Image (cartoon, rainbow, N blue to C red):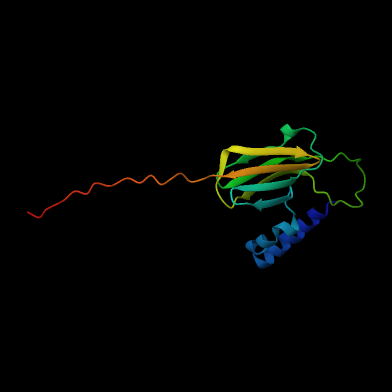
Length: 144
């Protein structure tokens, strides 16, 4: 029995009573996000630690970066014997997580490593180019 399935039914009943948008702020409590992420901001970079236990092949993890978001998708597949679940705290299954970044990052300079179940991403800040200042010609319109 999956405890999250029971919570989903309870949530639907409460949505009916309180309105659908009431529980949006509690989504992470009702179904914790996977994978778990710690994100740290420095002056010129963002460092992300992504908890991905049980990944057998790196090619099964997809990481995409836009200037303002980091998207991580894949599947955490824990090999286990099928039987009655007594305790299940390690969240697993398919995931698709979109994280908002605190500043724009470069697409051409991303460092990614995976070791001991931890994906480490270093995203480098997109430095704004110097302002392209251009003098605007003003036309003199004399009254006739």
